[in-house]
Image 1 (cartoon, helix red, strand yellow):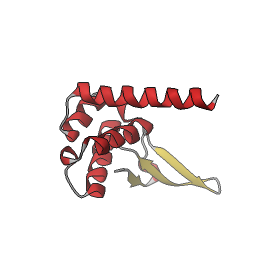
Image 2 (cartoon, one colour):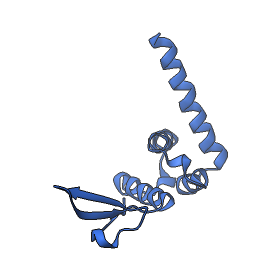
Image 3 (cartoon, one colour):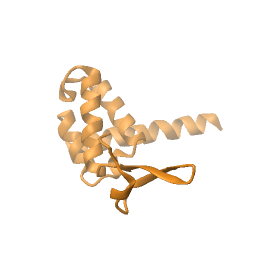
Image 4 (cartoon, one colour):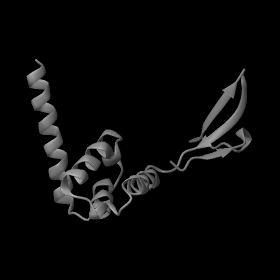
Length: 112
């Protein structure tokens, strides 16, 4: 995800400091969320072996579902970033998200 490992003495307030036996041993600097989204999209593209924009609609819907589960759309401009990577409009990404929400509601009703 692009995290950086640091000496604990170099840690800043937003870094995560890991301790072992009461002693700080390592600091982890997490990337900004927007950078993480770029890393996630790049990893998905590598996994599929083709640009995400070239995938079929079903695959794109699955990617949107996975990204939603990982909180990608809580990132500022997340929808726009994902839409660009998938080669679709923001409207299409919102439709995919709404479709997923509707499917989850149907599953919940059937489970009751």
